[in-house]
Amino acid sequence: MSAGPWRQLPAVHEVLATPPMQAAASQTPRPLLVEAVRSILADLRTRLRLGPVPAAELSPEHIASVATRWLAQHAACRVRSVINATGILLHTNLGRAPMAESAACAAANAARCYVNLEMDLVTGQRSSRQHLVREWLCRLTGAAAATVVNNNAAATVLVLRALAANREVVVSRGQLVEIGGSFRLPEIMAVSGALLREVGTTNITRLSDYAAAINERTAALLRVHHSNYQIVGHHEEPGTAELAGLARQRHLLLIDDIGSGALFDLEPWGLHGEPVASRSLAAGADVVLFSGDKLLGGPQAGIILGRGDLIQRIEGDPLMRAVRLDKMVLAALEATLRLCLDPPRARQEVPLLRMISLPAEELRQRAEKLTRGLQDLPGLSLQVRADHSYVGGGTTPNQPLPSWVAVVQSSTISAADLARRLRLGQPAVVARIQDDSVLFDLRAVFPEQDDALLQAIRAALQP
Ligand SMILES: *Cc1c(COP(=O)(O)O)cnc(C)c1O
Image 1 (cartoon, rainbow, N blue to C red):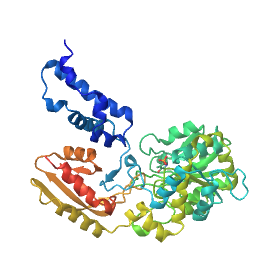
Image 2: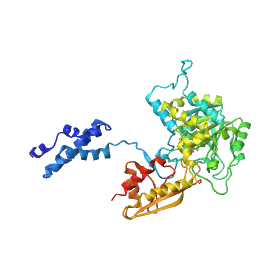
Image 3: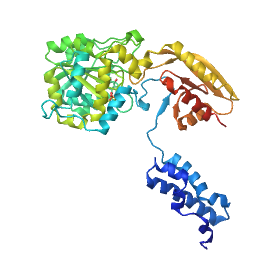
Image 4: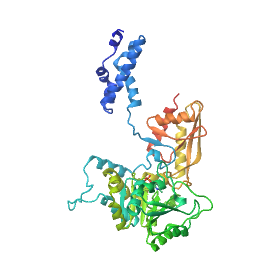
């Protein structure tokens, strides 16, 4: 075959010199730009082999515009911001808690600069990175000592390993939980080297069950917050204070994995029965564990509170080095803890706490405004109705927060298809599907995103 028709094709560098490719170059690694252009040119070569192609399609500008679409599909940033219209505030698949502005700034600042991560600026001596958050954690919870690691799963493994490896840890059968994905308590315990000693039954475990299981190999009693499930009906398990009494009497440790980890009582905001870190310590737990990115509303982290000698043993474990926090997360965590020192301020500035306390009436008005913005589009059935948001992320599941949702149904686009278009839009939107409608709950949508959400829905509804 003659090379004739291919001569009509521009060279790669000619396409790269066009304005759209120059614009893309500022945000795209050059090898991806080149790959995009080569892939379009390869397609054109194939087509030219089969027959003539309109000259307009062979111009560098046209090839550039096709390459731009290729780039959008194949070379866009993989981490994208998402508008969370699901009404689930701590959506683990969407990165759990969005951080406070001061926390995000602290992380960005630490990222760009050198920081006193492990240096005491007073003495110039080496210090522990844990000092950056320890004092605030102790102040907020009344703990004697504290340390932080990568997440609560890491905290659990580390604590069990440091305090109970090769010894037995007594756990109620009602608390052998799976917290989504790969956190299954029996497996986590196996990894730690502690030996699981199950007691009681799924629904009933008495203090006497714990007492009967204690022997010379026992190191600790472990209590695990149910987090994402609830036993309804005939149910009994000893509280922290009772377990602490037994542990003390038998010279054992009580480890309390409180999971979601509120720093203060969220009862006034309608969240009932969430464990509060300071209360667990006051009730006598020797070590308390929880996540940084659940009800604390901060970055992913595992927080460990407890007696000084125990925290020292935990920090001395070789695994500590494998699960330590980096400077950005420590900076963000510190900023979040500082906000929490002033609860009314935390309620304004920590997005999660602000979202929990949003009045339903405000959400109704925003949902109505959203549907008004769609009224001119043909073939839509629109409705605003009462519904519920959830905190999610391993907090008590049966605690709906009263909310309102905008319900959108299209006569031409299925709910699944509309939801897909929304996810792939710019910005990406994740909503809820129910009865072939798409539901938008605005509790986890920042008010300043309302307009972008409306435009994203309008764009997704284009035929
Ligand atoms: C969420 C949760 C965990 C896991 O915490 P991560 O920070 O996600 O690792 C462990 N235990 C309980 C009780 C939880 O609720």
